[in-house]
Length: 258
Image 1 (cartoon, rainbow, N blue to C red):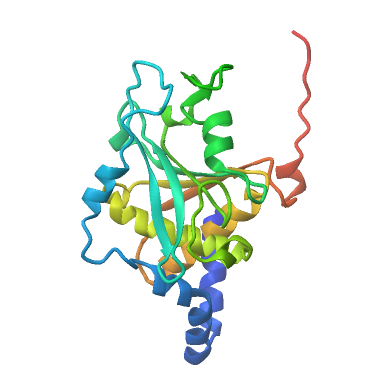
Image 2 (cartoon, one colour; image 1 turned 120 degrees about the horizontal axis):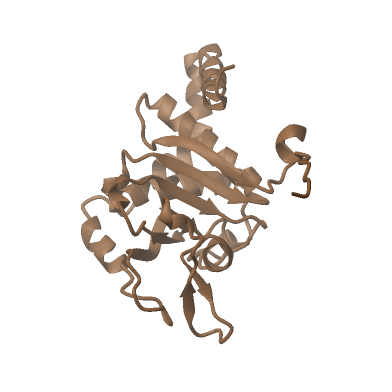
């Protein structure tokens, strides 16, 4: 009856225990060479508080009056050599933001924009009015319960940016997970108040691949580094692809008239 996280940790530790020191070194080298070379790239000695201040959004075009939460948006480098960066949009909670968890949202596709779909059509703080120029408040927005990051991922989605043309064509789930992990670690340097905050990953459709693979990447690095780098507490997947489990993916609910 162990939790899914405990089972995954047990699996990772068992794989670690069965490897020789040399094979483990090769293993970690293969899965983390990009991660290790990219973490903190361009961040050493930089004033991340100034970058954070520059990322703050005073107001979106067409935003209604009375908005009572902070918004941020900008780029975080995930590959200094290629000039590859992921765009994020953060909406903090209007009430007690400092005590609420951090939640990452990923749309599927692969290639759907988390900003264009998740933020503006689904769970974000605003809805676009019929005039296509102004916004209105979404009363069902998730930022009422959490501080939410909408991440433009994988390579080529939304406001993703790279100086290397091949980055727009060469993606894959493993690379997507590594880029998202690098984004998170570097983003936490920009927003250090979230470093110990409870963190959740959520998404829909093809994010049924992204969410668990990113979760596994986070737990792997936490375990191999013997410390909590990202304080992952859980994952949420809606309408997930791939088909994971009959009970979890298909649940028949009987509805009776009352």
